[in-house]
Length: 226
Length: 122
Image 1 (spheres, rainbow over the protein chains, first blue to last red):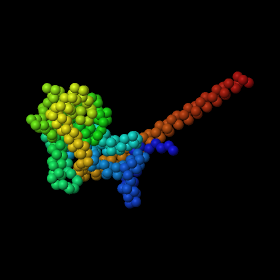
Image 2 (image 1 turned 60 degrees about the vertical axis):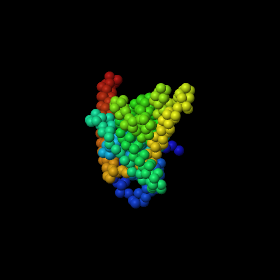
Image 3 (image 1 turned 30 degrees about the vertical axis):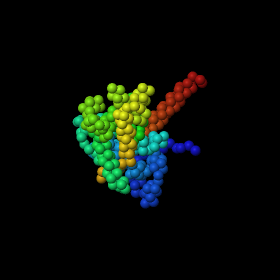
Image 4 (image 1 turned 30 degrees about the horizontal axis):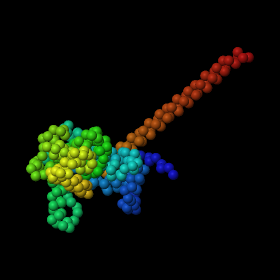
């Protein structure tokens, strides 16, 4: 059986679809991600909206980690979903939907950072604290883990944007070098160099060895990264 | 001395991006400082991977903003699609009219040609 070509983002029915029955909403709410993606590919806009509902917090988290600023992250998220909406029919399921969306978000964040760099200097001392939704079974261990997480998030936010983008995509979101290079518009070897530089900086700040200055080599790194 | 050179590579060694040569591996096996540094990189990678499950709370209004923007984009796209369809219809109509006019002209020319040849034939 051949898979019919999806009609693309024909959005004439978006408003009328929204007034569908409660049963329709219930079926969307219980559909799994793959079913929603398939429906969205074939022009079902409610399915795409449901995808947005389910993934927007994750997308926002990635955007904020990359741009280190809530307002900018909001813009990146909106742009990312707009691009995803326009190109959902091209999504063939070779990768997971979440990975596909991460790549779009990373690309939007990279574009955003490029624009921002042209307009003003990045603030490198802003701290980003991500709340921990998990219950505390062991208060001491949880406190220690929370402290480490906060230090790490702050150290990531302190990285120059170009280093930050690479290390976030590789070490947190597990994207490979080719994907990172593609989305950030750099060579694979440049992606690797930036990754190792970012790791060195994070390691020095979060897990310093005896005799190491946790403040690290900010000036040198920024000079390299910019 | 060798620690400084190897230290540059350890950030890539930790996940296999960089492979040490035999001499460098032997140095790390004997050097407590390099081993400690490598262990710290492993801790760093584990801590980074743990961040993956931390999802920030989306700011209030973000979801609504995204959906509104999608809807606006959808409406623009629908208008474009309608205009494109109308344009195609206009062009199709003009093409059909042109073809019909051409055919009509050809018929007239052919019939005139026949009329003008008839007396000669008789």
